[in-house]
Structures are given as structure tokens and as C-alpha cells.
Image 1 (tube, rainbow, N blue to C red):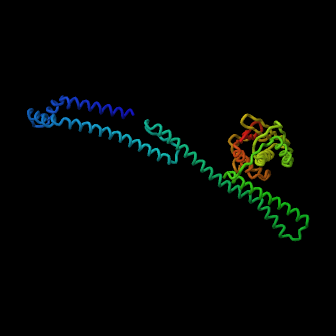
Image 2: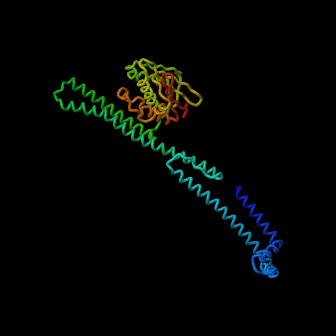
Length: 359
């Protein structure tokens, strides 16, 4: 705008000068002097030419001068606009560059510079997310193949034993059949979890919400999971209002709390308590599950809810987890319009579920 106004003022000044010299006949002496100086004409001849050709057509000269100034101004404006388009084009090319360098444009293009840099950051982030998604997909296939292979190998092994030894005693045969059946159930559970997380990701799961008594649900669930806590001597302590309720899908909520408690049992110190506490506000209900166990670094806390993520790879055979439990829990909570997060400190780990009171 400053450049445009500056050029407009210069053009107005030039027109005024032309008006004073031509229209007001103050430029006659200058024209005659120039003709005498740069040609072989005498003063009278030069005056005659000026009088007949310049003064007689002064309107045409004045209009031509104005048109010339307008064309010059328009040309300069087009040059500026073209330069700006070139800068924008260079900025767009910079978006495709495989670097993190900032895009720099002229001062007049500062709003476009900010937008282009914002777009570049977004594209860079999306590219990183895409690469991470590809990596996660590859890891998903790898983990799934590895996890399925383990029980499948056991099933095949025990079936081979049964097939190769027809004279096996009834007790030994019953034992091997029982082990094979357990491994087959384990394989079925893993495949079901894999397809379940896929359905949640594609939003194919429908909720059947109803008022849920949280205290009664957690008491019942703790009793049902007592065989899971028994091997390490863990126990569950409830510290919450007995009349606390929330509107949710009870079956899905049981799945969430069951996965969290199983995870807590797997990573708790032996003979420690898993404390369940809850509080309600005007908008939501917060249920926290705290267990005593190794500290989890901050950079790993958010990964707890990723698919096939296992905090301790060495404990896979011990826990028997697929790495999908907390991922499924997160998908269910998000489907309810809530949130889930983890905290760690003071040799304890706390997973908190936030659910809207009404939905």
C-alpha cells in the first residue's frame, strides 16, 4: 500500500508539472530552447514549429502524457504483483522440500509467510504421523504373527504328540488334550482381541447406555478377578462412594475396568494393594486405579494405550498379554466421550478414567 500510494503521488506530481508546462504554456520556451540546441533550426523556425505542432495539439500531448504515466504505474504494479506471485510459488515449492527450514517472504507477504510455515509444519507433522502409522502397522503385523505363532505352535505340538502316540495312557492323553484346549482358547482370545480393536478403530461398535452402579460393578469385578490377583498375593481396596453411578454401557465398562485391573495385577509388586478410588464433579466421574510397582518414565506413559505396546518385553510370557488390553480400554472410553490417562511417581502407577455423568 505504501508503494502504491507513493507511485500514485509521483504520478499526480508528474501530471501537475506537465499541466503547468504545457497547458499553462510555461513549457514553450523550454521546447524552443531544446529545438534550437539540438537541431539546426533558427529561433523563428523553432517558435513556428512549437506554435503549430505543440501548442496546437497540447490537449493530445497532455492526454498522451497522462496515458504514459498510467501505463508506467500499471506496469510497476504488475511487476510487484508478479514478484509476489513468484514468492508464493517459491514458498509452495518449499513446502515440498525435505527439510525443516522456515519459509521467508518479503515484509509485505508476512501473512502468507505465516500461513505457509503453518502449512509446512502441518505437512511435516502429518508426514511423521504417517510414517509412525506405517511403522505401527508393520509392528502390528509382526507382533500379531509372533503372538499367534506361540500358542499355535503349542497346539500343533501337543496334537502331534496325541497323533504319534496312540498308546498314550488315558491320564496323559487327558492332560495333553487339556493343555491343547487351553492354548487353543488363548489363540482364540488373541484373535478376538485383534478383531475387537479393529472394530473400535472403524467405529463399528454401538453402545447400549444405562445407569450403572459403579461401586457394585467394581466389587463384583474384583471378586471375579480374584484368581488373577492370587498368584502374586495382590488384593483390591475400594475407596469410593457406594452410591456413585454413571450412565454408560455396563458390558463395555466391565471390559475397561477388567483390562486395567489385569494390567495392574501383572505389573504390581507382590503382596500389594490395588486401590480403586472415585470422585464426581458436576460434569464427570473420575475413577482411578493405583498399584504399587516400578516407576514408568514420562515418555512411556502415553505409549501404554498404544496397540501391542508392552512395558516390559521380558514379561510377555509371564503376563500372557497381547498388548491390546489398554488400547481397547482407551477406545471404549473415547466412544463414551471420556478420557483415560496414566501417571507414575513414588513407586506407583495410576490410571485414571474420566466419564461424563450424562451422555
